[in-house]
Amino acid sequence: MAKSSSRQKRKINVSSIQERQEEIIEEFSMFEDWMQRYEYMIELGKSLPLIDEKHKIEENIIKGCQSKVWVYAEMDDDQVNYTADSDAIITKGIIAILIRVFSGQKPEDVMNADTSFIDEIGLKEHLSPTRANGLVSMIKQMKMYAIAYNSQQQNKA
Amino acid sequence: MTNTSEQILDIKKIRKDFPILSREINGKPLVYFDNAATSQTPTQVIDCIVDYYENKNANIHRGVHSLSQIATDAYEGAREKVRAHFNAEFAHEIILTAGTTHSINLVANGYASILKPEDEILVSAMEHHSNIVPWQMLCQKTGSKLKVIPMSHKGELEMDTYKELLNENTKLVFVNHVSNALGTINPVKEIIDLAHGVDARVLIDGAQSAPHIKADVQALDVDYYTVSAHKICGPTGVGMLYGKEDLLNMLPPYQGGGEMISEVTFDKTTYAGLPHKFEAGTPNISGGIAFGAALDYMNAIGFDAIAAYEMELLKYATSEIEKIEGVEIYGTTPDRKTAVLSFNIEGLHPYDIGTLLDKMGIAVRTGHHCAQPIMEFYKIPGTVRASFSFYNSKEEIDSFITALKKAKSMLL
Picture: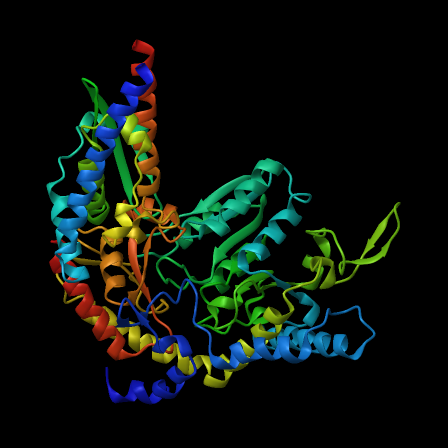
């Protein structure tokens, strides 16, 4: 019984992450060239709510060779909320997209989500492990938070 | 830029030697300004590698058969070309290595059995990580102290402090001939002479100088000098360590294996003489031969002409970039600088600038350039570095400036 209800829940939430990804893919499909795509990302980067200064600490930093990323997560009821920042604006734009997809989701769903939609919107190169901008490690870190909160929830239950 | 600079070199003809320069990146003609990271390869060098595998491929120094002799002659011929280029006294003072990093590690490893805890090592504040980390590792092994020769805001070494740091405990000094992050040409002759005054040995990292300056190791009286072939139109994975004969003989072998022995029994191995003592295993034969071909290619153009033309490019690029508001250039020693333009635009991150330039077909380096202490010195996350070579053109600089203005307007 418990098993089937958790499967039920997962189905709903995965589609929710998927819905947000599809929304983003659709938005990006309207752009005619790389310039419009990057202008949009730069806008997103500028509008990203900054991480609370108290969380912008050494412990939350991911050092890439090219840019730095800070990421922090908190639980709000049964949903995980992320805040993040970067010193580079394009990196920040991609962070804004990732936060839009993953924030407000159940930790379990974040754990299981994939990020292949980034390829589809033509930003694949930014998630290359050799790019060293901190984004690959950031996604790993977002998932680590999700795993930690998920096991915390399960312990409570 | 005036017509005279175009007359220094026949750029149109030279550019035809480099097949890669006619390709497109992201739908735009490639403008390659990352020459300080690696240079492009002319057809003459590519053909040399192909010719090796088509006509000469055999293992060297060991076969009685003719093909092995042909390969050996080509490889040793290349060593002689390297010797002649850097004016070493003997060909056996040229150790063919995998590149500068390998060369530096070979020397650092050798000194691990020589240095004592009271000994001191000096490195400059503008070194590449590959000329810092091996010495830190060496100091951990030997207990010796690593001291740093500081630099000024202009990007010059503070020679007065260097003189104060030198003392009878100083055993080794390591300085790059040219800084990879700033392009500063260091006063290596003076550095070497001062070090010799206290009987210290000097290793000069020539990775960034070799594409622009023909170093004469005997005139410099340098003890060790290192170079990577891929920065001077040669292939990757090959380079040289020059060392004075007695100073190479003094060092123990770096790696054990075939090629580096004279006699082996299970009780004892007698090592081969120079240079083979440091060349264990089958070397990068085609790479070594192509290294020689790359030197031939550059010498045929001529280093004086190369340096003069690159200086024209640097001056032109500098004057154009200075017209863009908010640009700050790092490394401002105009008379003693290679064709490197390391800069930031106020309020913009180098990563963002580099990403947008790439979209417009322009390849530059961004980040800390494996020289984090320099970035720490200027309190910046990194820089954008455009580095020019003799095959670059004024038109490419114009495209770069236009793209840079575009990137700036998108980001601000």
